[in-house]
Every structure is written in structure tokens, then in C-alpha cells.
Amino acid sequence: MTKNQISALFMTITIVLSLAGLTYAHWADSFKILGRVKMAHILVGIKSEKVLISKDVQKYSTVNYTVSSDEHTLAINCTNIKPCWYIWVGLVLQNQGDLPGKVKPPEYSYDPPDTWGAYFETTEYFYGPYPENTGFGGLEMWGKVTIVEDLRPNGTVAFTTPSTPTPFPIDPAEKAVMWIWIHCKLDIPDDAQGDTLTLYINIVDDVAF
Amino acid sequence: MKEKILTFLTCIFIAMSISGFTYAQWNDTIVVRNTMTLGQWNDTLNMGFVYPLNCTEYHTNPYTGKLLPGEYLDKDVGKCECQYKDLVTDLGTGISANKTLNITITNAYPSYEVHCNFTVQNIGQLPLHINETVISDPSATLTWNSTLSALVDADDKPVIDITITPDLVCNNLSSEAKMWFELVIHITQNAEECHQYTLQVKIMYEEAP
Image (tube, rainbow over the protein chains, first blue to last red):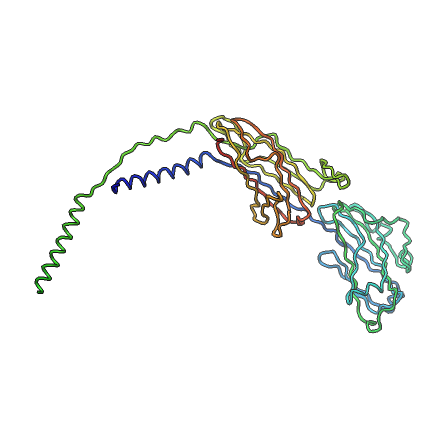
């Protein structure tokens, strides 16, 4: 085989391969489905809060509180806690998410230590849900609530509006009112008396379905 | 002796010069002239999406397990839209079809399900064969698991279940023939809130053998 024959063979193979690629590209094609899924979010948060302390308790105990930046937790710092100490905590919750939520009893935690839950008892009352534009100032269980008269020391309430059993659904933008009675039922340990206790009320949000 | 060496070297030099000249004289170029006439593709190859097209929400009743249209408890939370894009017209048949189907789901939540019914038409002149589908996440967050028939996360947990019925692959469509398919997108419990997921189904076809 001469040099020219080899060159001709090489060129032929090159041309055939190029044409094969071109032919394949011409005789095969595609089309596509594109999907985009944007997930919703769930957020039942604290929009407003009140911590009511009776005059009797105010004589020996100080209480201050803050709402976390994610609006999920109310932290209450308390001093000189002793048996019969109690406070009433009121929260306006709002569903700020995209999904219908579910209002459930909150979770409690204590610092320090978390086992202090055994020294306290809690009772919750829920009202609502209410539309977003509800004027809460005029509501019996929020606007002019007084401790002792409306929110009694024994953990009962004097509202004429019946409370809503939990869990109950709360649609996006809707609000609900929650009142919590927190009561110290046992003597706290001697070495902890006089210390500051931080009590956390954590809102539990869940999809309604 | 010195002169003999010089004479010997000069002879070698002259001999080599002559041999190069001789090689150049006896070597020449052969020009191969060839006229190639490429076959003309009169028959066109083209496939795409045509109407009808519709997307419907579905939910599974948690008590009966039955699949029902709409959202659970008649809620209006999730939204789904589907539309065709990239319209092309086949030069051979004059029929138009779309090369892309866009599905947009917003406010999705676990268990949300969308059924998208689309139509595929062979708008070219040649019989076609769907030879492959490639399902992927263009953002590369999720990967396709064919065993689970789902896009899965890094822990191999299904996030978006995807099924197409009947199977697209291995279908032959003659010129102008249509086929109807249903794409089901189901959001699983592993999908994260506030996230955005993407998916792509690439449908590849070739001339039917």
C-alpha cells in the first residue's frame, strides 16, 4: 500500500465519521418538561404578649419577659419564686405562614435546670380563631383583662366567652388568644431559693392537615 | 591522512545531497478529485407537546386512602400551573408543537400532589421512537433514583415522587400521531418548607427503526 493510498483511506474514514455524527444529530432530537416547586412555610408566631402579676406576688417577686426574634418563644425571668407564686401569661398568636396551621398547647422548658417543671403547674385557655382585622382591644379576653377578677389566682377564668378546645385550625393571617396560668405548687430546693428562673413558653406550630 | 578524511566527509555530504534531491524528484502529489452529492432530507423528524394540557390537584383521603381531586378539606393552599413554550413548526407537515412544558407549583406542602395531563405529537414526516427519558434536578440539589421513582436528597430520601403513565420510553409514533400521558408529581414528607425545588424530564426520540 503506497503512501497516497494510506492518505486516501485516512481521509475517507475522517469524512465518514464526521458524516455519521452529523447524521445522528440530524435524526435524533429531544424535548423536555421543566418543573419548579416552591414549598410553603409554616409559622404560628407570637404577635402580642402580656404577663400579669398580682399585687401580692409583686411584693416579693420580679418578673420580666422577652419574645424571641423568631416569634416562637416567650422567655420569662422570675425571682424569689415560692409556693403559691403565680402569673398569667396572655399571647396573641397569628398564623403568618402560607398553610393552615393548628393551634396546640405550648411546650414549657426551664433554665436552670429543666427538671424544675415538676415544681410548676400550668393551665391553658384558648380563644379564636379570629380574622386578621379583629380589634383585640374590644375583646373580652384581651382588651380590658384584669388579674384576680378575670384571671383568678386558682387558675380559672371569668370570661363569658367559652374557650376553644385544642387543637383547632388557624388559617393563614388568622389570630387566636391564649391565656396560661403558671403556678408554683411545691417548695423549690433551698439552694435555689433567691435565684432567677427563666421559664420558656414555646409555641408549637403544625400543619392543620 | 587528514586529506583522506576530508575527502571522505565531502563525498558523504555530496551523496546525501543527491539522495535528497533524487527523493524530491521521484516524490509527487496525487490530487484525488471527488464529487460528493449529499442525500437530500426531504422527510422531517420532529416531535413536541400539543394541546390538550391540564394540571389538577389531588389528595389522598387519610381515612379511606382514596385519591380524590382537589386539596384536603377543600383548602385552597397550593397552586399549580402548566403551560407550553418554545413553539416550533415542522417544515414538512406544517404542524406546530412546543418543545417545552413548564409546570409551576407554589405553596406546596408534604402530600400535595399534581397530575399533569399532556399530549405528545409526532409533527414530522418520519415515524419516531421515544428511546429515552432522563429525569434530573437542574439545580443539582436532588438526584434521580429510578428504583424509588423519585428525586432524592443527599440521604437518599425521596423528596419528589415522579411518575409518568404510560411509560414514555419505547413508544413509536407514526407521522402526525398523538399520545396522551399523565405526569404525577407528589411532594413527600422529606420536602423542606420554604425551599424551591426544580425538576426536568428530557424526552429523547429518534427515527423509528
